[in-house]
Length: 75
Image (cartoon, rainbow, N blue to C red; front, top):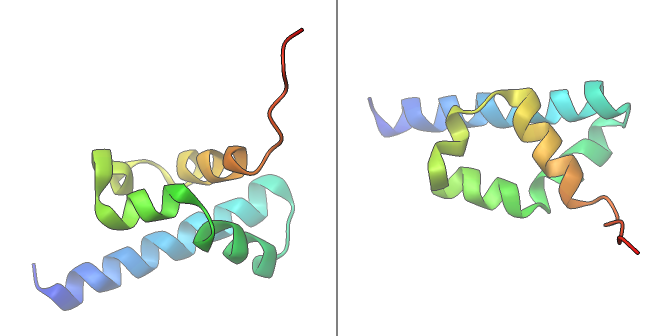
């Protein structure tokens, strides 16, 4: 696979994950894009860590969404 093919596949994956963020959490395209590019998960996807790029778009969108949700503390 050529470098151009890899870039095209990665760009398509990113677009699908961002679209999944919009669909799953009812947020705007701009907000979903901001979440994606400001997430630690996106860096891991780009770096190929744990083959995250092979996970489903909805799974990755959920991981990204959860990064930005306030943590609840058990009392």
